[in-house]
Structure formats: C-alpha cells, structure tokens
Amino acid sequence: MPLFIAYMVSSEKLYEIGKYFERYGYAPVPLENQHLTLLFIGDVDSYHQHLIKRRLATLIVEHSRLLKIERLELLPPHKATNIVAIVRAEHDMLKIRNEMLEMLRDIVKIQDRYSFYPHITIARRSRPASEHVIDEVLKHMKRIEVKVPKTVHVRGLALVSSRGGRYSVELWLSRPVT
Image 1 (spheres, rainbow, N blue to C red):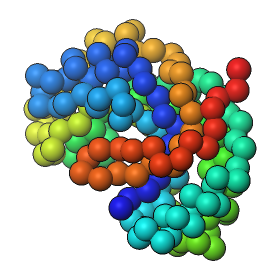
Image 2: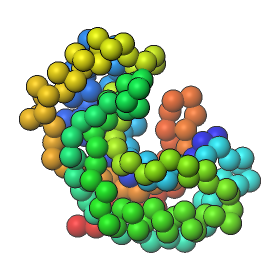
Image 3: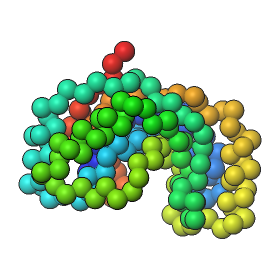
C-alpha cells in the first residue's frame, strides 16, 4: 500500500476551479483528497507501515497554517493529465521534508528520485490531453487566474495511505500553529 506524508488541505475554491475544467475531460479532486505531498514513501508492507507509524508517532511537528499558491499549471507538461496549484516552497516545508526523509531512511528505502515540486492537484484526467485540449486549458487558466486563492488553510500534516484512488489518514503528525 503506497504511503506518503502530506499537508492535508480542503479548499472549496480549489474544488470549484477544478470543476471549471470538466468540459475538457478533467475531474475535480474531491475536497477530502486535496493535499500537498511532502514526501512520497512508496509501497510498503504492513510490517514496515507499523514501524513507520511508530517512528512518526514520536514527532511533534509545527508548521505554517497557510500554503501560498503561486499559479496554476499542467503536470506533467508532456501529458497534461493534472491541473495543479503550484505552492511556494517555504523554508519550514523543506526542513520538515528533509527531517522526515532522514528519520525514515533506516526503516524503508525511499525512492526520492524526483525533485520536490510542491503542488496541490485540483483536477485529473485519465488520459493524456491532445494539443488542442492543452491549448484550450491554458487559455482557460489565464482567464480564471484571478479566482485562484492566494493561500489555502492546512488542516494538518499526516501520514496517508492510498488504496484504489482513496486516501486514508493513518496518523496525524501535527496540527498547524496559529
């Protein structure tokens, strides 16, 4: 079962923006699934999941209550299967990510092969978009830019599992500081 550490968010505004793109074959990400993956741990068995939960349960993590959104983007650029809100990588976010990576290194080998690109997926499509659809989506993104919120509230930092497109919080690692 894939595990990851994420800032859990729930933004009606991002959900509504995701709905704008339904006409292009995208489905908005449900509110309960909105998150920013801080660290993807990977597919782990129940034994290693237990070890990870035990290790992380000792943490007390403080972090910002807000994530700052910079813009909308299509990811990955060559397929355009996701519409995302790009989030500014703040110092505390990078520090927490590196601490988690170091803390779990002796339990499980984390395939940290992609550079960290903080974003919240707001809409998805199952197949790559055609060039025509990409052009239309990019035009639409420019038109609705003013509706994109500048910040989103963080509900907390969590260890999350993924099964069949559904996310479950396995362990809350924090609540945001005020």
